[in-house]
Image (cartoon, rainbow, N blue to C red; front, side):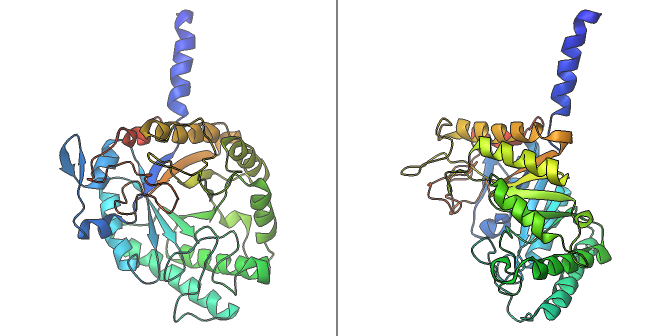
Length: 343
């Protein structure tokens, strides 16, 4: 009987090493469908969320702008599909009429342009949004308050490089209070450059301010990790950075955005030993999983592939030609299996 013990222990280890969240951002899905895009798996046309769920994905992220294509009504409709597929629902609030990221965080049109007014506005906006999802029977599981807010949000009022951390801390505090007045989603803070420990540490060292944002209000820390934009974005640096983040701040951690190319030329990727191919996509995400699995106290929680089916924007904002998990005709690639239950 004892001879089987190592095998049993190994099997148990494999079962328990799976991440809590193996998901993707599928925000563009309904926009693409209106353009006539269809998806297929093994030759069978199916809804993309069904394909993803069949291949093991258990969480979906949806961005919401205050205007434009990705407004509240759009997010509500897509959330119904996510919940119907049995997935965890993550809502990514950009708090802008359009894209918000480290290079732009514009105050929505019609919103106040002073701190007091914005505190009231962001509280009410977040409360009403969370309530809207609950009212239609699709309560938000994880709420991301701001998108890649390394230099703050709602610029210039909440821009840390010019205003310091206190205004941002107040705005996040107000947003989270609004969310909690309407429901009980887990709160996720999302920063770019997950490999950059100095930047992460500086941000979290400054953002918790007496009377404003408190560490107890944050449930999950999310980071972006891409192989295109900075030579420092290596797996070794990610491991070091996230280990420090776990040890110093003690919060569950997810890689909230990542992808890897199947077609790329003239770009120096940060892990040149990983092939530019579908097998490379699997290697890249598996290597990130291994980093998360190795974090102290089981704090590595999940990976979200960014827009794996965005046909027509296959470069996904990079200088590589194609980072998708589907072909230009919508057929799944072998790498669709990155979402399998052992992720």
